[in-house]
Amino acid sequence: VFKMQNYLVKPQITQTIENLYQCSQCTETFSGHSNFIKHLMMHAGDATYQQCTLCSKSFSDNNKMIRHLRVHAGEKPYQCSHCDKAFSANSFLRRHLITHTGEKSYQCSHCAKSFSQNSHLKGHIMIHTGEKPYQCSHCDKAFSKQNNLVTHMKTHTGEKPYHCGHCDKAFSENRDLISHLRTHTGEKPYQCSYCDKGFTANSVLKRHLRTHTGEKSYQCSHCSKGFTQGSHLRSHLMTHTGEKPYKCSHCYKAFPKQSNLVSHMRTHTGEKPHQCSECNKTFSQKHCLITHQRTHIKDWNSLPSKIKSIKTESSFKEQLKKYLEEKVKKEETNQYL
Image (cartoon, rainbow, N blue to C red; front, side, top):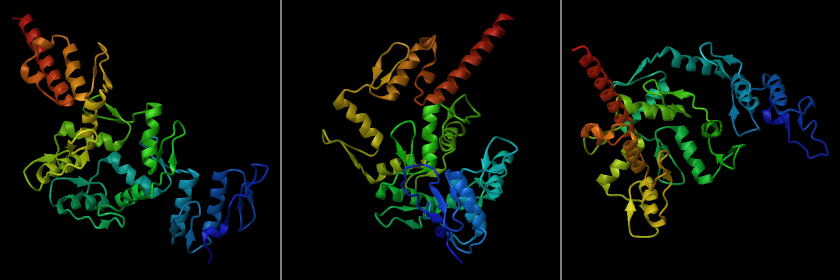
């Protein structure tokens, strides 16, 4: 019985970049990292307990160790037949296939929601129960999911192992790096089925979809209000508690949201980062720019006041589209009268 760490010899600093990776089990050497990882997989079947020295993870199952090594190697042999995605394990592929079939066999007993995975249902139920079993050992924060605690812990350690090759930004999570890279490439693979908007991350698309469906699954325990996002509920709860943790360093004002503080700071700095593409006017607040941009719409003055007064951009566009479609229908009908 031996650990996977016995296979690894840390690269020695030499005058050549060749043969940096050496297997201590069979002394074979490799110049490429991925080839070295694939070689370790051949030995992995011999061990009953293994620890990966490329990271801190340990495995009691050989198959899990081999699957994990594929993550380091970038090997994804399991291809989806419906799209171009590929996975390092067959179980990951099976889980992904449900996104194509739409199957959601795990039903919440508290509301009408259903889920494709039992783990997702368990996490969702904690929204209803308020249960947060994963406690941070550094502060008083607690979480309903273990992976949320792991992510949070990095705010204490400052660990950001995932670096962007295009700029100097670094991230604590690989998924955050992947989403960030799309800001450089312009790629927006997650498309809204209701409108023409695209997004860099699936989580952002899900959040956006609620503006169309009107779904408000985050319910306030103090009043009857519901919210589309957990962050909006947390901000709302501060109206009950009176908590205002974000304080201005220039004056006595304090705010329940960080975004409110950022907006307020511009009254001190005079910064106006939001510019109109039609007339080059600048604004300190994004919502002021959005309101202004509507004045450039053709026949703005003839629009009904109930449409002009809509604050959210998605609702405004939706109602404007309906109004214009009805107007065209009326004009076409009048032509035949």
